[in-house]
Amino acid sequence: MNTEAQQLRQPMTPSTRIIAVLTGIAMVSGFLVVLTSQLTAPLIAENQRRAIEAAVVKVIPGSVTHREFILAGDTLKPAQKGMEGQNIYAGYDADGKLLGIAAKAGAQGYAGMIYLLYGYDPGCECIRGIKVLKMAETPGLGDKIITDPDFQANFEALDARLDPRRTALLNPIVTVKHGSKKEAWEVDAISGATISSKAVGKALNESARTLLPRLLPLIDQLQMPDDSVQVASGSAAQ
Image (cartoon, rainbow, N blue to C red; front, side, top):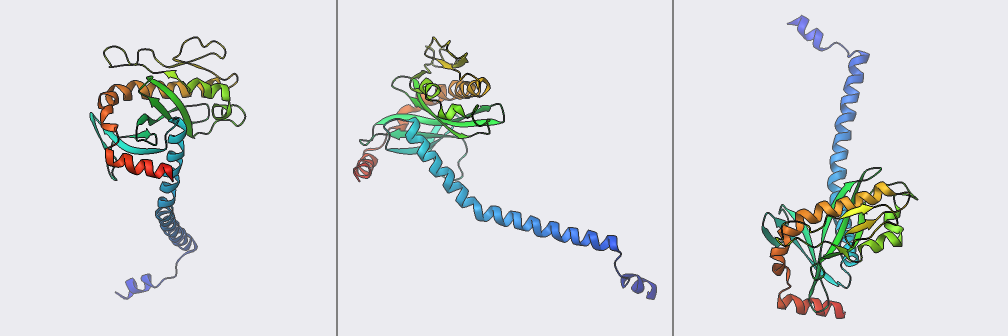
């Protein structure tokens, strides 16, 4: 017993001290990371919400208010915390008329994923605008998908009609070489930023071909109730 007690009272070796210190640092660092994440999560969520709101106004021209829905399978419901599915944003004018919907899309660009929000007008069955939410493309080249007015003009009325069976796009959205656009469903690429341009076209095509056949049969559910119309009109007047 005395021998065991003596062993327990033996001083720590240098290597043991280092391990103990590193373990302590790791534990404190982990705690600080978790704490920081918890403290900043609400701020990040609020910033994302504001970014989405600003983007919805841009991609649904004329909209003054919007409502968020969740599309899960063949069910469309007003968004609530904890619901799973695809986020859909319905945009309305001052009288509560549905002008269009906005949805997220993404595809691999040159330097990373490009995430964007696009607006769809069910009246013309076309995409009315896009807003890049996040990307890491090369400054001065790939980021021209945001700043180039000619490229943005592709999305003033980009054809996204469904086929007669309403199960797929009538014509896939494709990006073509700069200056060679001939069809309403083609995206005219930016010279020198072809990869980024193609990523935008691919993101729109992949999203539209899977989303629209599911969403359009439910489009009437996006109409704003009469009582909400009064609130929206009042808010717009202010």
